[in-house]
Amino acid sequence: MARFPVVSAVTFLLVSASTAQAAYPTYADGRLPDGVYHCEVYLLGTFLSLGEITIKGNVYSGPTYGGRPAQAYNYQMDANGEITWLGPLGGFTSGGNSVSLTQATLEEGRLPSFDIVMRQPDGKFAASTCTLSRLDDMDD
Image (cartoon, rainbow, N blue to C red):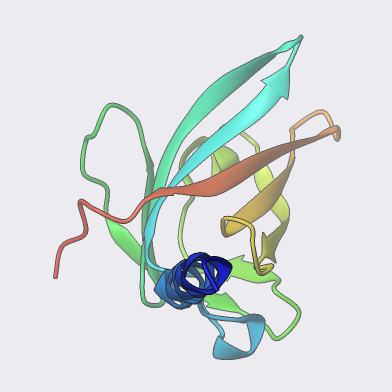
């Protein structure tokens, strides 16, 4: 009998924790979860920050460096999680660079993220990952 209250308390905590998780959009929703995504690339044994991209609805801004505001543009995401940016994307689309592919990862139990594959002027490709880093700093 002494174990019943302990088991009930543990069950209550597990159920409470599972219902408290954020309900992120899915690929079918056609958008990424709102928030600030930190972008980085692994280069020569270290992670290099490429700035932050802010997502709100079907609008993005950035990448920004050092908190400077950036103009907002629309984006589209298909049912497979492939993202099309409908405006410039900082260094990913300047200096002869272009975005070859952007693929979202929206899996239960993982932070939402997307990978940007960039084609460089010399024809080589570089990939970076942008992961949801915070939900704050969002303008209404």
